[in-house]
Amino acid sequence: MALSMKSAIVGKTACRSKSAAVKPAVIKAFKPVSIRARTVITFATVDKEAILADVRGIISTQLGKELEKVAPESKFADLGADSLDTVEIMMALEEKFQITLSEEAGAEKITTVQEAADLICAQIAAK
Image (cartoon, rainbow, N blue to C red; front, side, top):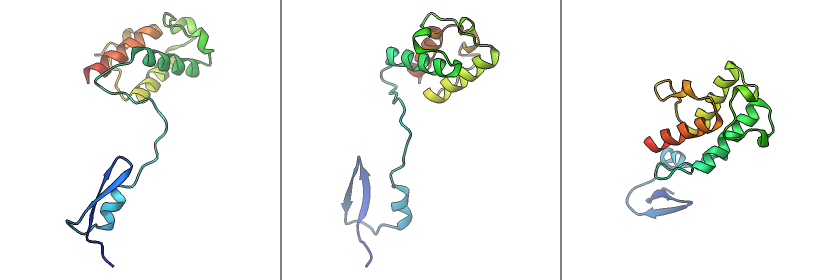
């Protein structure tokens, strides 16, 4: 039996109207997608404390340091990061925050944890 209803996804519920037949391809396009847990960033507000905490966590993980030792004023070099470690940290930050840390944005001047967090906040706010 063919359906004569059109479905539209609203939040987690489906609303139906009697306007057109629903094609299987359309239904497949609206299937829920499983997503890894990650920080949701809205462009209206920038939670600087949350970003700093995430930056500290990423640097801690990348360098194998205890989180308590990764203070905002900590320099990457003082934490034992070499140039390759710094590139890997920047790549992890780009992936986490879905941004690009380019030379034009000032990424080459980042030497501390706080500078990294500040640059990320500025780029998110500029979106």
